Length: 73
Image (cartoon, rainbow, N blue to C red):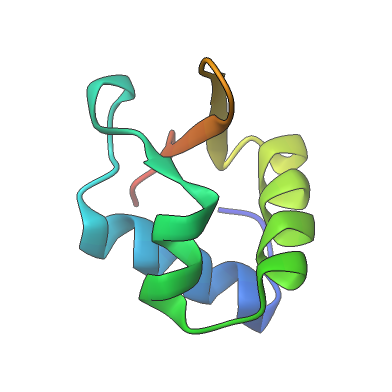
């Protein structure tokens, strides 16, 4: 896995803890924010960075998006 910032590492651990390891178990920004206890804006920006790095995948839903881990190493 590429070098991750501390907040990105926290988000990866939160996604693992939430069981978001496949596309059938996606989690919202709110779920991730609650799990890692960080500000929503910081989590949102970090989710974008993690998506660009290929660590997580974004799935568009009706009114929001969900995320899950692609690389669970």
